[in-house]
Amino acid sequence: MERNRKILFLRIIFAALLVFVAMLAFNFFPFLVKFKMLIYIVPYLVVGYDVILRTCKNIVKLKFLDENALMFIATVGAFFLKEYLEAVFVFLLYQVGELFQNFAIASSENNIKDIMAIRPNYANLKQKGSLNRVNPEVVNVGDVIVIKPGEKIPLDGVILSGGSYIDMSAMTGESNHLNVGPGDRVLSGSLNVGGVLEVCVEKKYKDSAVSKVLSLMENINNKKSKTENLIRKFAKIYTPCVVAIGVLIFVVPVMFFNGVWEVWLEKFLIFLVISCPCALVISVPVSFFLAISKAAKNGILVKGGIFLEQLFNVNTVIFDKTGTLTTGDFFVSKISNENFSKEEILEVVALVEVNLNHPIAKSIKKAYNKELDIGRVKNIEDIFGKGVKAFVDGREVFVGNLKLMNSIGIYSCKDFELGTTVHVAINGKYAGYIALQDKIKENVKSVIKKLKQNGIEKTVMLTGDRKAVGEHVASKINLDCAFCELLPHNKVEKLEYFLCENSSNGKKVAFVGDGINDAAVLKRADVGLAMGAIGSDAAMQACDIVLMDDDIKKVLIAILISKKVVRTVKQNIFFSLSFKAVIFLLGVFGLTNVWLAIFSDVGVSILAILNAFIAFRGRFYLK
Ligand code: ADP
Ligand code: MG
Image 1 (cartoon, rainbow, N blue to C red):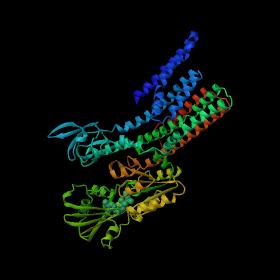
Image 2 (image 1 turned 30 degrees about the vertical axis):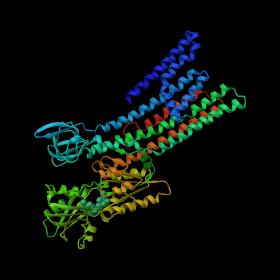
Image 3 (image 1 turned 180 degrees about the vertical axis):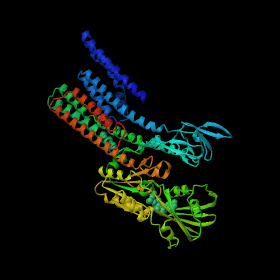
Image 4 (image 1 turned 60 degrees about the vertical axis):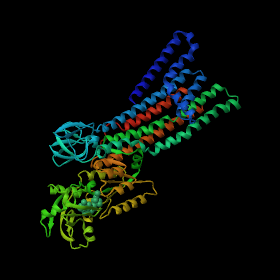
């Protein structure tokens, strides 16, 4: 890419120099004018040989009428008119436009490359007391690796020994240092800033966070935006039509009305050059590419331009509660026990939750904060939206909400008045509960307000949690409505209600969740945004936009980026079409020439790209 760009640059400079020298030469040695065509054909080929080659290739493949062909026909026409300099300039300026586009793409590729730099090159594998540098792909689950200060963490795992700071900015776009120590999980792709860490590997490289993110980045361009596809289709029909009309413009007056062929050939050329859809064809994908890379820089991975377009049309944003609006980092506010000690209750619940990733499970394990013997737990069953069932030391244990208790015939229990209550039943008998409390993320309220200011008409919460808790959260942050005590399939039904409501007005519905118990909703929404999803495969697959950490502000940034890109594309389309229309009208009245047409075409392309550049320059700060 970079090499091609350099070569293109040199070709443009070289051709321009040749033209300059030729012009001087004609001044000083007038006899050379006789060889004008031969002399100008050199810069013409230098700068345009690839366009000619592409046209020829397309002719051989019988798909000859694209913008290359337009350019080529225009230059050949100019040669017929003995306007050699014009012919050279059509190519020269066209290539300047190409170079520009190249730069735009390269700069956004650099953004994406920055993120790709998370790819780890090696892992220090501990084998029989010695440390070997190996390819991360050969490391197995259970192996022990050592990460020195300044090194990238190559694989996901649990810290065995050592303490350090972890910098996740390459993945999340946010530079905060996380303090970690023994027992903490580390994700591949982050940077070890502080001390030496010994980590027990939990996932093969291909399943690790870093390789998931990388494969996502590699597949970004597969889903073209609708505008992009539309323009492409449009150009396919449009170009042959233009050539056909152009030929008529030339042939009809000359054949039937005694027109002077030079005059009408010139009009034909002007028409061709004006009609070249370059600016449109170039600027739309460049704008989307710039937007996607800007998003990536902010820790937002958009799976394709089409989702930015959808996001632009969103008027309803639906949130999951736990882990999305609230931190999901519960603390135990009360343990109520019947036939067991409080310590026993906590231990049993922690054991049942041992394998789960639900925020409740994580928080209870954190509260218990002791080694858990997995051998004591059998047949763990995640009962979505209700809780968990498992056998601990041979006893049947149910852990979850009132719905779960009711489903096994226990009706005597009541929820603690504050927060989320996790009830426990052991061998069919009620054993007590653990009351948990969660905090609303601190910036949620202001983000919701800004969403409203930016055209989001409805903000909604769906939660599996009890009504008291859900409605409390919703009113604290001024949501428009909240639906509580939903099972995962109820969440899909509610979402469908909103999709239905919008079916007539073309507006879209976005869902923001963490992928735990809501992957189905993420998938069903027009745009699914998964937050803090680097750890969770299901969420990353089900969603359209991955928010690399769990900062809710990223939802707003994604929406702002989508507004910006769609607006920029609209401006560019409007601008280039109206500009061309003006030049075309001038052409009809004989007030323009090929030169003006060439300049306007290239000028419009460059301005369009510049416009996109300006829209996405700098970091995306929030007002
Ligand atoms: P949310 O919609 O708030 O993310 P979920 O659908 O994940 O909630 O869960 C709904 C309810 O189910 C929780 O409020 C909790 O009462 C219960 N629950 C779910 N998973 C668990 C678990 N692992 N342990 C205990 N209770 C759980
Ligand atoms: Mg959830």
